Length: 291
Length: 282
Picture 1: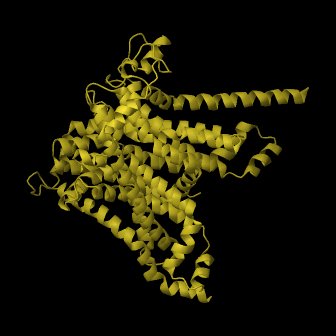
Picture 2 (picture 1 turned 60 degrees about the vertical axis):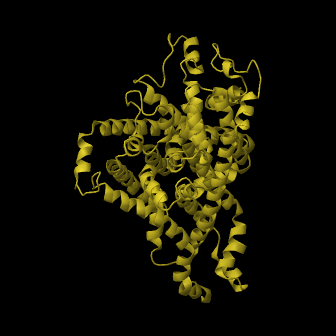
Picture 3 (picture 1 turned 180 degrees about the vertical axis):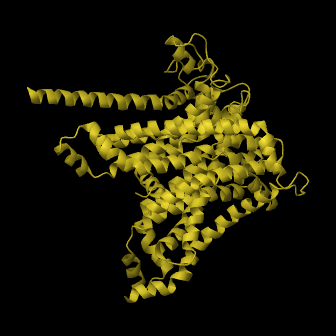
């Protein structure tokens, strides 16, 4: 009783004392950009207010729409495959394996996530080379007769970049789903077995319902993360061929740092911020339900 | 007879299951094996038809060329300095904040933890131009400090969430016992809470290190001189070159992976535990 009142009396100041270094640091680094970008997105090149002109420019800017379309496609396809591969491998890893064997496979399957994106990009640029191993592999299986320019062909360049993204980032799903699987009480499966349930029935009625929240959670997070991806396109294609792989982030980089249109660049980042925050609202609601 | 059939089916499942797991692992790991294989051969053997998995001329020439170049060594050192500083700074700020969040009730607590969660959702590209301007005005453009500060602003939110979820599992009675023994709150954190959470600190630090070690975009935008290049920037310069020295590029990549892989082998368990604890509440 005594110690509880002791806690209460002193909580206010002490709590702030402990969190303030981090909060001040983060405020300084996030509020300034927020203010700065919001302000200059309403100004023209010479620093004069021009109202919503920059925002109206978005509607008539065909490159903006192209890169938005590419980004949406990139995000949806990547997230779907992250989920399928991550879920599949997590289920494989969760079957009766000795802990040591499980740790080994899990460790190896996580390696793509560990690599710097620039390293992954370098490896795949070599694999995608016109006389590289991927073309050789397909030719020797007689699936194609002439080498494919994986990163140069406008029809498949974006898919090639997506493949690298899938390879690099599926492990996050894998470990999150695996952790979710481990949290399911084994008694449930035993009870189901006693009641004569087939394996696929226990999967449908026990495993999937328990994974529901993990999957929704990860899909939201992954959508937010994939939507803002930058490195792969920057290194592998530079947005080409014919802007077929230009993502919003890469377009913003070009507008701001190549064309030096800081104001319009900020306008597009505000657009991206708003889209991300919309997804975040769902994420935060789930997070607080979990708490 | 029936039990024999059951046994057979079990063995059959077992074989199928291991087959799937091994094939999947091989396919996923193949690009990494190719990187290692290419790094161990002369450049003229890289694009042979048919390609050979085992180098015909086995040589560590590529590694020698990478390591003999002082600017490459410099870029590794830069990456190491920046990543270790980010790791240290993140651990210090995150453990203070997590302790505050986990142990005290105060006005504005919900707002602060909400702010931390939201910062994670902000696309980095949104921060790029403001950081560039901010660092230029502060005279920090093209310095370690600019990189350390910006990278820490990316690692800190997740580190705080991760550590907090660990601190929350430590009963308050432990702090109280330390206080009764005459410790201040500050000492309770340093002498009692941090030591029993060493695995969590390691996981948090490893997470911050990985993020900082692999960052590219801000390293490109906030540095200019060759002496300030991180290895990620040096690698992107390699890839952009007209005549590709693939074996050197792959050797460079292998070298860049070594710190992470060594850490991974020893810390896998902690890192995975920490990541799943920080991102998801069941």
